[in-house]
Amino acid sequence: ELAARFPKDFIFGVATASYQIEGAAREDGRKPSIWDAFSHMPGRVHNRDTGDVACDHYHRLEDDLDLMNDLGVETYRFSIAWPRIIPDGRGPVNEAGLDFYDRLIDGCKARGLKTNATLYHWDLPLTLSGDGGWTARSTAYAYQRHVQTVMKRFGDRLDFVSTFNEPWCVVWLSHLYGIHAPGEKSMDAALAALHTVNLAHGLGIEAIRQEAPEVKAGIVLNLQAVYPVNDTEADRAAAERSFEFNNGVFLDPIFKGAYPAGFMAAYEDRMPIEDGDLAIINQKIDWWGLNYYKPERVADNSESGADFPAITVGDPVYNVITDIGWETYAPAMKMLTEQVYDRYALPDMYITENGACYNMAPVDGVVDDAPRTEYLSDHIAIAADLVDAGIPLKGYYAWSLMDNFEWAEGYNMRFGLIYVDYETQERTLKNSGKWYKALAEEFLNREDA
Ligand code: GCO
Image 1 (tube, rainbow, N blue to C red):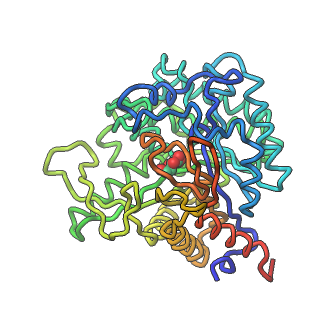
Image 2: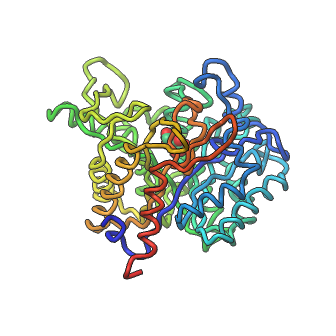
């Protein structure tokens, strides 16, 4: 039995993010974020979808918390929108924005849910773009003030906080590949964003320790599980370079106090590092989160003269491909986790996101999404294997509570345990949600509980 494989203090939860679910984009003093601007720009997001309304969670907060509570989970991971708290990124604090999260957090506590707040899940206040957004060092200090404000207000009621969700996306996907806001395609912009985000993480940890030393502070990373396409020396070296570029540039400064050597050999003279920065970044944290969805396969491309890491992305090896086109391969989550515990002195771990995109809709009130259930059960079994292997894995959050605004894919791609009809805002628990609920209940009610 799957549930029986986890220790008593393990926690199951669900995750969401502010811009993906809240809507109410112009209400109660919230000002635009870079995602409001980006999604309203033609050609950026599928179907020109925006987060203006999203799941209308801002107005349906209590009902949604009830739905979550009905799932039987013990913890909720959500994000706090900076543009609701400090609408211009710097300057006045918006009381009405704080009130919303007061209600959210108190609503969780009233239902016995542990809270895990993400302090940045991509909705940078648009005003800060005028300074250069994440490419500007000043943004790290503006972020620190956001963290101070949030922790001062909620530090007494938060169980966990993370400084950032997926710096990889904030840095490479948003500033080098141009897929996410602000849509930059520049290595120099990306290198600057990389260092600003790492610095902001360290400044954020300082602020959390200052304002709320009891709260467990961490960071959430979407590390890549990299496999060489061919078992050749060249492809293994490519996989190693890919690890540095995609994972090491975050893990090394945070856990070792230095950027990786191969990466630095390529880019040191373009990195805006100042004296003392690495000591700020390299602070002890209480936990880290892994967001895991799929394996990555890479081949050597160094002959082409391409920039570091000089790789090409290989095709999926296994043929279970989700509706967003991602390869399904649960053992990669184990390989990756063991690899990073081998290489770094990491604290307690949580799987902070894991889930699958399948777009089936209700038929007579039933969403038959068996492949999602299979994905979840395969990955949760790997989580149990990790616990067995002695990894300090303490919890698992399914992505996501409900279908939502899937960034550049708009409303076209669905990851929820709950189906959302965006015309009516009606919610329908999917079969996978029923399965997860049964797992959570079995876990809570098992004999040794
Ligand atoms: C993430 C994103 C989520 C996505 C999910 C599926 O942290 O990657 O937080 O917002 O919706 O990953 O792509």
